[in-house]
Image 1 (cartoon, one colour):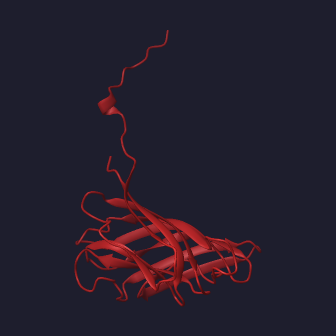
Image 2 (spheres, one colour):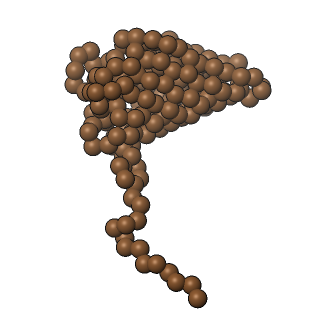
Image 3 (cartoon, helix red, strand yellow):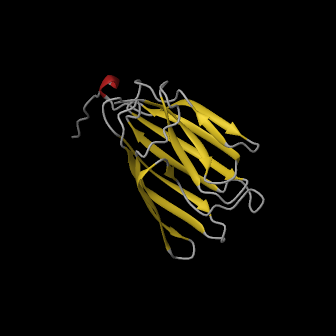
Length: 190
């Protein structure tokens, strides 16, 4: 005889994603910002994006402060490493210590060479709003490279600064953002 234990709804695990904000850009611009998306409400956040440039630059993400100055964090506080493979079977790496931003992918095709998007991915951020410790991030992304390869990466990094962060800024190492859609979600603390 099998006995089933009754579990009250309040004892079930909870959690999930809560949509916070999105940005969309469909014409050439130097950078796109997404402010006021990090707060004390959540410890962890998920960013999902698709992007294309009007040139062959590398996709760049900066953090933005939560109301402080400078708004865009350009100090040498970014350390990161992403490892991947390309569709030709080669290995790809992106890494830096004490950088002024983090680079996500490299050798991107531009918007006249392929259909949107040339770059897409996601990143998880740990406690970006905290003003008492460094911020970690991890994720995966893929880009179509100007030599025809598809390059897929996984990895992460640390923002070594106790500044309370409020958002992110998207740009390319050269040329403009041609098309971008990005969405930020909070991960419910459970």
